[in-house]
Image (cartoon, rainbow, N blue to C red; front, side, top):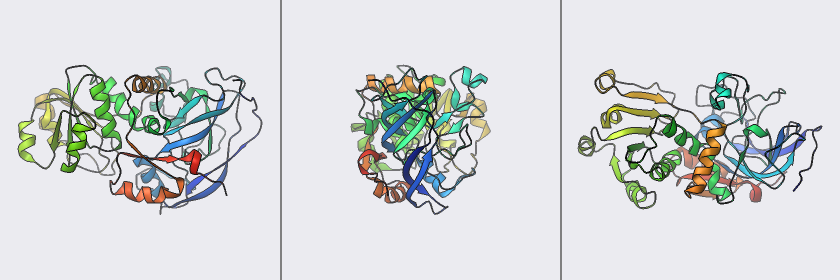
Length: 361
């Protein structure tokens, strides 16, 4: 189906925005930049709620925030307009947008398809686009993005449960691939069984690995094993269980966004093991040096993957029937959802039904 071609006007938009550090979101009328020759305009149908949305809305991390702030970087929907030079998309295509909407396109990172590590990458919200306009996220009805930063969502993936893959999914998938924690026979630990952790378990199992969940919540054991397929569950406060598991893991994906000690996790690693930290916390990590030296262990961090890898992840998820476990909510429930998210009261990701519940004022 041929898409409508137009590039010379701004696009009216409507969403919900936080106005100050209270983080309370309310209806907000604004404009998107004009649809340019290489742009895709998407009607947003669903948007996941990431922990980053909560932190940014309330400005509780060491990062400058510009209000009004429209959160959301787990965006899926339908293409409704394309620029004249767009090659990958047509109107009616199922499309997604993740954590950023532009990069410089010329640096080493961009040339290696690692756009998320470009020093000039533009975040999907709370950023400044190339024309000087602010970027607004997916808690809104439409978005305009250069086609390089838009993903095709296969028909096999349900849109509502595919949305969290655009942040949570790629954030765990990328370090698994980069650090070689993706081979049958390896044993991977996952710290935290939330929005990122539950998807990490699914990817680990699809890659043929054994998966151990490490959690502070004993009540999550049944779902970790029976629903998600984990092979083992360790309660981090049970010292005897941890003692028995010492030296058993090839790598650990740590998804917890609050401060927590990482020394116990280092003890679970085999020699040459890798601990990858994905959660953002204001408090600095406290890393003991002796376990690193004696076991030649690595503590690293990782962000979302680049465009090529993210599309690879989406296709892998479709092939292996991997999607997030979600609670779908209307836009009017978003502030309550944020309160629940702050308490960890969600299994395992809130997803806003934007297409059906967002009503313009």
